[in-house]
Image 1 (tube, one colour):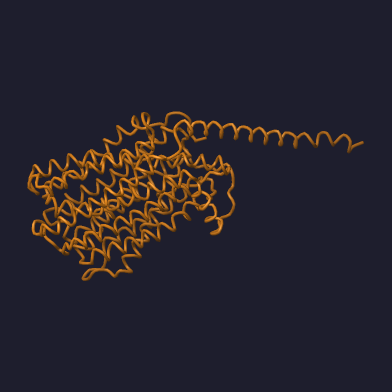
Image 2: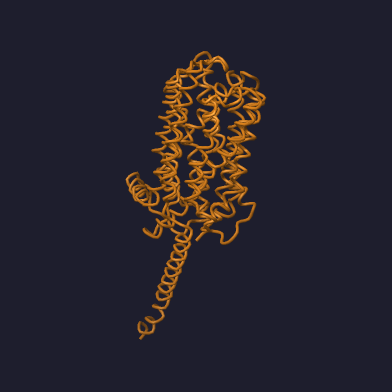
Length: 494
């Protein structure tokens, strides 16, 4: 059972959501600005940059399950998760600043970029895996878990969008702001402070609730034991089905995010004043998710919501580019073009977020399925497994975007409005084809997730009965042990 039965207090929801701000800052930086910074500003080859980020993601993905297992096995008076949330954010902040301030005069080495990217991602995982693993511990309720995840999604998106808005208006302003190096250091410094404050602040806000010794002491950590438990967790049928859909969904997300600035600058030719509205559009998409995902889950369930959001959102998001290639779109750079694009992007992005939040919430139900089968809870292992899938896939998406940019023959340091039409056509055809293919695969698997609301609630009741029987048996054994000396003593004295 969860720590709280029934509706969760608003304060707890806000505190949980605030902890995800750090992930939003990191995700926004890696997805929207890092590739264009190292490629167009520092002059590194786009394919090489995307390869470096892919390597960092793959290393981090291998480390994540170990971090999750360590988190599950942490046994302190502050619980399993809080020690991680206090220890990791300060080193993370220092590494984040270093990522955005390579030595002046020349681009960093390939190995240097790989190394600092690995450090940032591993430290972020040491914050995010314990934080998100608290959700199924706090509540076992099917809908309240979705509520916590939508607050986490809201916090993550607000963190990322705040950084985007500040980038466009304060740190990287003007028509060529994203092509100037000096603003990126300030962007990194502000993001580092925000990440540290969000993780530590969220941990402090939940301290009174979760700071207690775990019910049972786990066995000591070993690498062999960790991977054995991870393999056992990943053999859960529901997790394998989720992973198949999630893999395609996260490649889809990585490709979409990392190529967005190229689309905005070179295809749609959005001006600096038009780009200032982009974070507001994305915020509107998050609000759309926030107010619709709960009723949608109640009506059709998490699995169908995930599949529907993925396929419908992608198809709607591709409409502007189909019309552009068909000659039916307003002139790029015009107010009409920007307004129409933002209208499509708002709804399409909202549907995409519904899909990903639904999928993330589905993992919480796998925790009880695993507990019923094995008698153990492994929140950290499952959510680190999710990060393993996400990071491998997101890295593949970023790598794919670099290959698409290279294949389209978009020149480094290109200027908006001067790119040949055939280059933009190749870019859009490859991007659109990849996005639609990935959406179909993702929707197919996510919609087949096998744990429904009714099955989850039945399992929660069975687990509650099992725990009650175990407590009664333990109490009876303790009573028998306490009574035994009283029966023996008279015979002894005789």
